[in-house]
Amino acid sequence: MDGYEDCISDQFETSEMLASFLASTPILSDAWRLCSHANAAAPGGFVTEVAGGVGYLAFSAVQEAGSAYGTTKGSMVRLDAVGNGLFSALNIQGKDDEATEEMPAMVHAGFLQLFMGFRENANFQNQMSILLESGSNCRSIVITGHSIGAALAALTSLWLLCHFPSIQVPVLCITFGSPLIGNAPLSRAILRQRWGGSFCHVVSKYDILPRLLFATPSAGLPFLLHVCHSGSIPDQGLFSLVLSSTEKAAEAIDQQLEGDGSCFTPFGTYLFCCEEGGICLDNGASVVKMMHLLFSRSSPRQTAEDHFRYGEYIRRLCFQFLKRGLQGRQEDAMLNESSSYNVGVSLALQSSGIDADEMVSGPVIDCLAAARQSGCTRNLNVTQLAIRLSKISPNKAQIEWYKSTCEASPERLGYYDTFKQMRTTKREHAVNMSRVSLAAFWNGVIAMWERNELPHDFDRMAKWIYAANSYRLLVEPLDIADYYRTEQHLERGHYMEGGRERRYRIFEQWLKEKEARKRRSRRRSGFAALTQDSCFWARVEEAKQWSEAARSGQGDPAKLRPVLERIYEFERHATGLIDNREVSVDVLAENSSYSKWLQEWTALKPWFQKLNGYS
Image: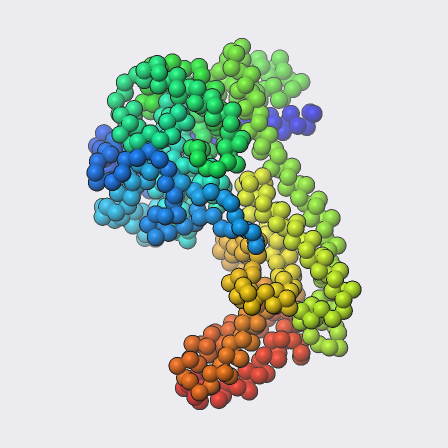
């Protein structure tokens, strides 16, 4: 139990350190300064600024729900139906050979209409181009906004992350008092893309607007704008409705996060702030529960006032972390030095502005502990995965042994063609079982990664990138062999189009991102142990069919040319791999599918060149 409590304590302190870091850098204060400027000087618009190498774009909280933006409905709309794939990266991709029942990512219709109005604005497009162009002095971009402007900032950030995935400038979204904008599938899609860390939502403990859509999920934009801009105190009926609805959302949040997508759900990191400090949470369930617990201590007047107090909180936050409660903290440490867990709880409560003797302190402690346990669980999960990986290493070793024996065989087929023919039943059956076992393990890894059950930087850990891609390069050729041996290509198309498992695409992307961060220029002294294009044999199978198609269309140059262009493209790809020694020796085996195809193509090539004018 002591180890568990130490872990929880570390997580409490880490959360406080994160909040302290955000408050002590100029980014948070500069973001709020730009929001205030936009509210005052650019109603219905936005402002931009470059300061300290950071490019800022701040949306005004003062927006209008006029006819220029079309519908002002409050219902949610699908993102995949917007702007010819504007948010296509958030579309749900079906999992391997299974029809997905995942609901689409959806956002508030009114907010989306406002964003689309800005995106079509020439001035907005020009300012975004200036911030994004490589010649600018921006080392990072912060998109920010207060109130309704915060919802626009979140949608703009999602658009940038979706539409410009190759931009080298990091994007950070900082919102102040933002209403919820989307459903649980949107939150899950953001987690899958590893974008949660790009969003920091600053929420004062009594602000009604971040909780409002729990109560009125179909609220239209005019109503939301009235609540935001009027500054009037909500009547007791609205306050009670929001309070009870937030309580119901907190009670049902665990089901909603996995639910049908009909309810608004938070995403990203939340910084709850007050006079006493702030605390960060990035667990969706804990965020909603904290929203309710803090709001339950408020009154109608406080909920209205808190929406406009972010400037005060941001100014005080940095100083509070430097000077607050030092004496009290020392006394707590002396009283509880036998348990660092209690110290962590005390610090977290103090950052939340809650006294330990308040009735609500118990549920708050439970909420914080659950959020921190989630962080500990991620680390424990990756440790357990490493143990499981070691347990299935004999399966990988068996396939490696199979590969080496095939390469040494007098048949000179290589392991791809040997497995495709499946002639030695007992040996190939054992290899096939190992292939299936490894697939189950790595599918489980992907599932845990997408459910956010692993550390946020899991896909950047060198050990796991290497392990995943070592598996991909070794086993995917066997998947390709099985695909064509069982003639699945006749029904589903070639492997690259209809047969490739999703895990291989993900692992390949991890490796590409790692190599982009650290380019390697080392030249190989010998052939690779594993062919570096794990889909090489799928390309060979396609080239074989293209060659056959070329033979059947010898007399018609119009039909031949597109087929020959594909063959030449593959030939250049294969030659490049061989010249760079990025293929395994089994590719060059005398009787391999590639060697046989190359012999046939070499014989046919001069005739085709003469007929079609290729050189």
